[in-house]
Image (cartoon, rainbow, N blue to C red; front, side, top):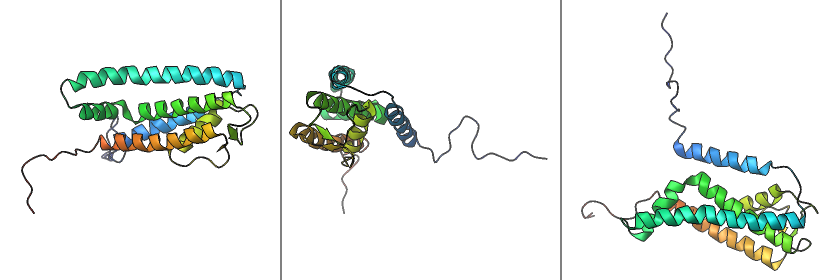
Length: 187
């Protein structure tokens, strides 16, 4: 009796499972892992975590980004070099860095004015509460249960929405060749 043929060989991924969907799945895994972090924060702890996180995220992103862009800019126009670096950074790296940066911004805002910055937070919120706010806001949909209340928190929320849209547009444009190739097209 002949063995039935499998549509996919062992070790090979199914065709419907693209690299892009695997990257999105990985980013979802990172979001869930960070969202499940236990523990509650005091304003003092939020300040330390926020400021330290801002410095670490800025260094972790800017140093490799500048080095790679500088190396590529010697061979490509600067805009093309930046888009190529964004594409190679990947969805998981860019998304996680972006969400963590804004989480740290919101932590420092809450540290500065714990009673005024946000409404809807527990007196001792979790790191995950600020991460939830940052991820939701990045997709131009701040959550309804946590609200920016102070002018600083509202301003940061609006800036995150603008930069989130700009980052998404830049990331997507890295996959499109805007220059014409080949001969003239006549219609």
